[in-house]
Length: 469
Image (cartoon, rainbow, N blue to C red; front, side, top):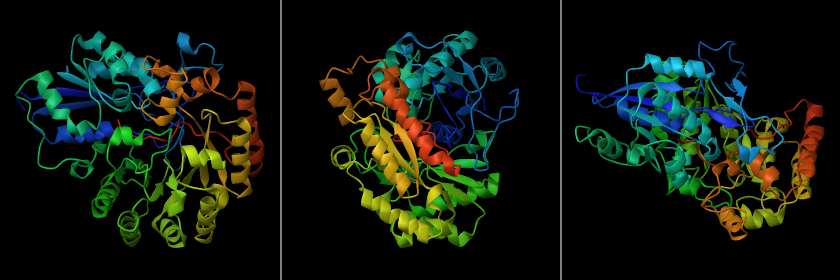
């Protein structure tokens, strides 16, 4: 369309000690793309630096049947702040040469929209902005996502972006574009606001759609001391179940998608009005699809009828949120479940036909004041129940009670570089558990899990915030 604006959307690289495609896609950016696609005022281009299926890669993607798999990676120099962390630091995603080639193929953009998920992945944003500037000069760059929301001042000072947008992108997208590109840009289309008003994500922009994310709700009514869900999403809101079911059926019909990962932080909350009618509709449709729950389920909500419905509707990968078997940790930092709740949930799931060994249970390690012995006892407790412990390392997140306590103790401050939010960096450089004991926990996981052929590894990212961005 004559006079329409070229918009380039970029999902940047991950810079980290470890990264794995554990059902990760830039859902927030794809919602933004869908909003822009709906207007003739824009022409879109999309570059995904985490595209494991890029045809230019030297080796084909390795993947599990459900879509998970490792990212391509290249070792890079560690930032000086992380030099004492005894792990290799890498850039995960497509080679830089492929990104440069992709930039050369897109029309010159009038604006570039970039996301960033983990706060400590901002070096990927910096690298993208540098290469965009190298190719296009002073084109406006707009940054959104979790990093922009939680670390807005740092992002404004160091990301290289011209505009930093905090909060859900749909709320300010069109007003920001009007500020950057002029009054010819339309205002936000249509009535309504919030998650239920959004169009379906622009999954047609993805190269691989064998699995896709689904967001049925945003936020969480619980207030765990280490979690930023409420800071990112505001008030907890849920979509109409029929709308979600329609979306799942449409994506299966259009793309042949067989696996869906729920990105909710509170999938089972208000279950009778929300997830139960959704899964009953899916089960009745008898689609050949499977569902996965990487962000964890609240175990108190899993009773016998719920477990049977999960099984009947095709929920194949179950991850449950306990955090710890230590009563003092649960009481003060995560008062949403007890060890007894986990036992009841596992009994119900086993009776419904699930194998306990295939059920992951999230535990957290590295909370301030938490001992290695406490973590070890939690691991043993989960193992004795027959389930698979999955240890997620504590990551200090600005604005959470744990962050505030660390700030009061002088461990962190408003000026702390987000690189120190990194789960491994904090564990080695600032954590209360000595590195030797830290490694001892990893060995314990291997001893207790590997004899049954299970994955004794830790959770690849701290799964305690929505996969927005």
